Image 1 (cartoon, rainbow, N blue to C red):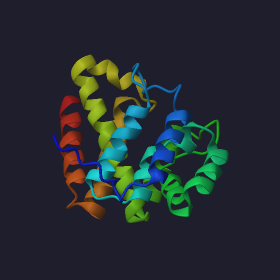
Image 2: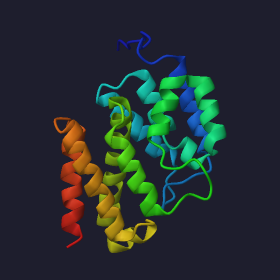
Image 3: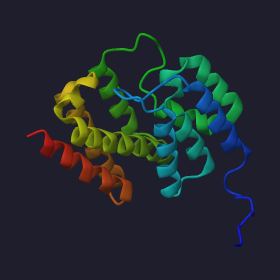
Image 4: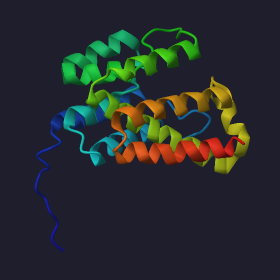
Length: 197
């Protein structure tokens, strides 16, 4: 058996640092309404970014996209900037809908996020799209396993959550419609909408 031991020139020690940092930041966090460690979501989003051709900065930002929002606000953002640079911090900023506690009301935050995403860079949109795709997949899976009670774990409830994913999808169809991730998100949001009837 011949194992390829050549180092990947694409992912450097910075990726390893981000993986460790993300794991430490989110070590006590679980996915909403489950016992699944939160790191599973971050790894899935990073995998989608890599599969879509994202670069190392985008992949690092994918691992850290919820760090500011969920694990320390502006202080965490400063650490990310110092450790990984301006581009990663900018992508994380673009994927965060809050950096203070308490957060502003749900509908207001989500609308502001959508408005900001409209003019965001391709890198921010790629990481955001990977995040939304993984979350939508998780919702669809949970609906098949747990039924309508799945909606109860979301602040927007069923109607608000569907509105959010349908609105984000519409934006991505306008900006990145030829992306396989957009097409996959479209398929899943259609299934979520059908399950709502």
